Amino acid sequence: MLELIFMNKTIDRYQNRTKDLMSSNSTAIEDVQLEKEYDSFSMTKKLEHLEVCKRKLLGDGLDLCSIDELQQLERQLERSLSKIRSRKYQMLKDEIMKLKEEEKMLLEENAALQIKVISESSKKQESNQRSESSNHEEIMDVETELFIGPPERRSNNNNNNNNNAFL
Image (tube, rainbow, N blue to C red; front, side, top):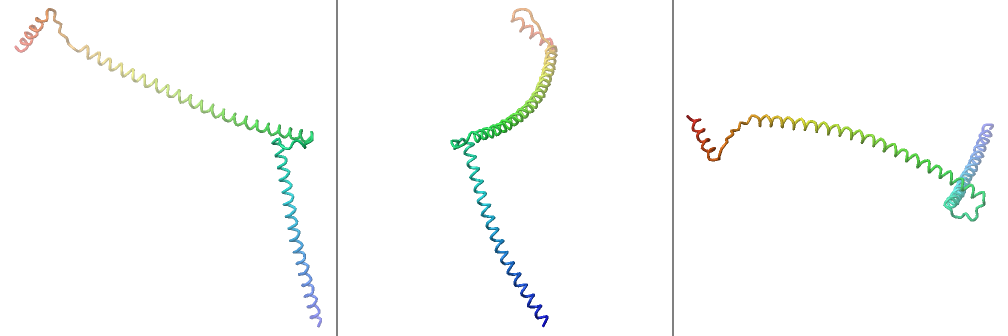
């Protein structure tokens, strides 16, 4: 009988515990839903605030701003402008460095091409000098016959010379 009493007490405790867990689960679900709603509301407020700041930075809706807000906007714009100028300066500096490197490369290529042109022209001059000297030698090897007198005699002398050569 004692066992039956302990068993009933254990069953009662189990049922009470499950009821507590169920009620705590429903409470936890409600808490999560409330937290989501709060996050959503908070995000909506943040988005609205960002939109207002954006409009102010673009120059809209400044009529309702106080002097302090306007000075704060001015400082913020000056910081942004400073960052923009710094980035622009860095990009221009990088571009100048790149162009200087390209200029150096082109100057080196130009120097190499000038050396090549000079070399080619000296080879052509040597070739021309060789061909001129060989032409000059050929010209010197040519025999010429000089005849003095009227043209009729030249043709007669030529014929006589030719006849004499065959004899």
